[in-house]
Image 1 (tube, one colour):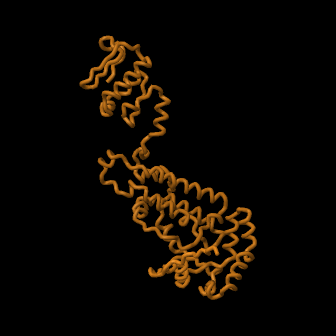
Image 2 (cartoon, helix red, strand yellow):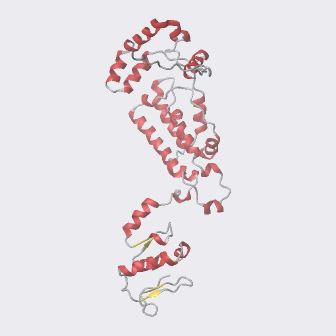
Image 3 (cartoon, one colour):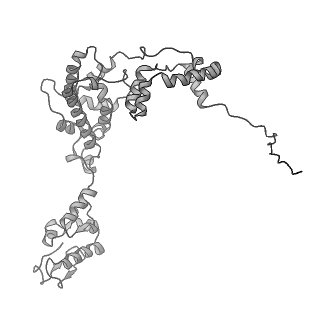
Length: 338
């Protein structure tokens, strides 16, 4: 520990760390040279555990600013703004107030008294859930009204904040005193799964477009109440959508160059040039998003049949060519001058 000026023997400072007793009286109190000497003494003579035993009041007497998160003698700063810069760049990541996931949810989502809270059962269910793709190809996010879309994005941001807050681990001291805390209360896995399911759960296709906004707002309330299993059951009950309106079953030989020969290739080139001029114009203007939209609405959807997959494999992985080791390479014969 440090003693201020005049406290013992007229010394400017005295180190009271056990078995040290270093002192000096050649510096004026609070001078820059004295502060540098104190910092150098800690760096050369003491380890972080001894620095932790020194109270902040003694450092404040000499206008020194140690980093209490590092407790490293090399992290004692002469200026407070240097400590702030170090703190913002090297601040250890930790959970807010060592909150478990249930407390993070309580601090994030607003309670709805009419619905209650089902997060106590939703967290372990999410942690053990095996994710699968939704039964539909696209959600109805862009079909809702603007104010409903803003509400969806707001709830999406709340889920992102839960991921950020739950990613840092709990302190080892907390886990030692609370060993019964389950993994779904410590891990960010439930919130990551909720993020992946969010759009499918909230913006499910509706049978009627007039009730779409009402259904989305209802699902957002269920999300705040933790009724995720009911949302997932509603998602699972959606009829699967198939590309029947644009797809047509086509024999793979129809696109085989070996069958059509040169005529088939000419037909393919003509199709690429004249099938969708709108898509070509959008691509020429570097508007790829509009170009793909034109293509999606005009061209048929390819079905993944066994014949199609076999043809793709044959094109991607052709049979290897085996060379005869006895075949001699043909050397170029140079004409001799007459």
